[in-house]
Amino acid sequence: MSSDLLDALNALEEQKGISRDVLIEAIEAALVTAYKRNFNQAQNVRVDLNLDKGSIRVFSRKDVVEEVEDDRLQISLEDAKVINPAYQLEDIVEQEVTPRNFGRIAAQTAKQVVTQRVREAERGLIYEQYVDREDDIVTGVVERLDARNIYVGLGKVEAALPVNEQIQGESYHPHDRIKVYITKVERTTRGPQVIVSRTHPGLLRRLFEMEVPEIYEGIVEIKSIAREAGDRSKISVFAHNEEVDPVGSCVGAKGARVQTIVNELNGEKIDIVEWSEDPVVFVANALSPSKVLDVQVNEEEKSTTVVVPDYQLSLAIGKRGQNARLAAKLTGWKIDIKSETDARELGIYPSATSTFIPADDAESDFDDVAVDLYQDDEE
Image (cartoon, rainbow, N blue to C red; front, top):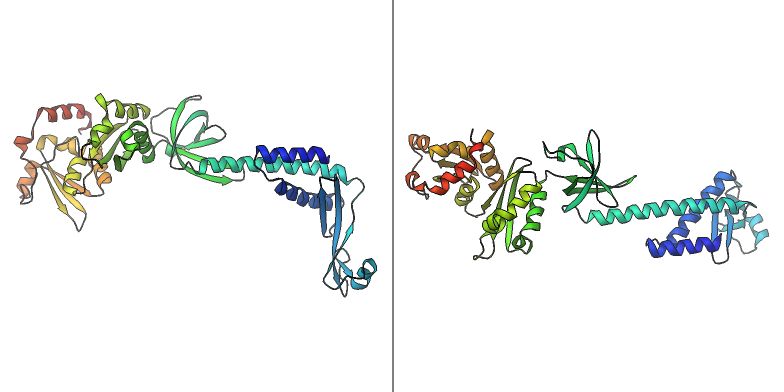
């Protein structure tokens, strides 16, 4: 048994990265348990596993004491000195108690321990592989579905896509290839558990990093994301190079880059706006595609009042308030939208701080196109 076991341990150390010494230590501990269970022994024992010599020996261990209270665990000083005159109080006396048929039990136990440790090591390697990929995007294959989760194969591990991480209205079928975002990797008794998402804003961020070289290289930075998965999202971008158009970089030639991402998300609309440290400009940009006439800022309450042309009020608010809601999430500012007529009646427009052009001059062919493209957003 020893040569075969030694070869197996060496192979495991080389292929699986499991230390041979660690395995031997685990086998010895398991043999102690096997000895006590199979031979109904409650005494302290030590197992010596010598693979080079091919020997397995079991030694009982007893404490040297003045008065013996349990002869399975203790030995008197007088009896200890009979064995070896050098023994003193509090020494430990070891005596071999190897059963005659212990080799068969040892072989079976060693096999079980090695199998278990290999399984644990493989789970550990998988965990280490995926724990470093948290907040990253991966491509997987839909393997099976149940009432709560969709299970996505990622190679050596099966990830769970919970109901609340699935895009509403999106259908999944076995063998479909989908991109998912890893939100959590944790150890469990059954091995590493990977949780993935299709709704997380991080998925949108990673998709843009994959499709837009300027973002991947750090020339263009995604500053914030607001997402209502499956319906519409907004992202704000900023270029660290003044000669680079951050919005144009993300849109791509004829919209090719952003369209690839829209297709991956099954038609989710994506508004790309330019970030600005000036809240007036940023809030105005965030309400795209609507035109903004004025933005009045209340720094203390971190709120803004936005004035838009009458004919674009519904566009600015969006279907069920979605455009305004996403703009508020994107900027981190509360946004109160008012039509030009209402703002004039309230006497808040034009204000002394108004920096935008009048409504009559604001209209253009581009505005008409924008309204046509987003007419389904109007209430």
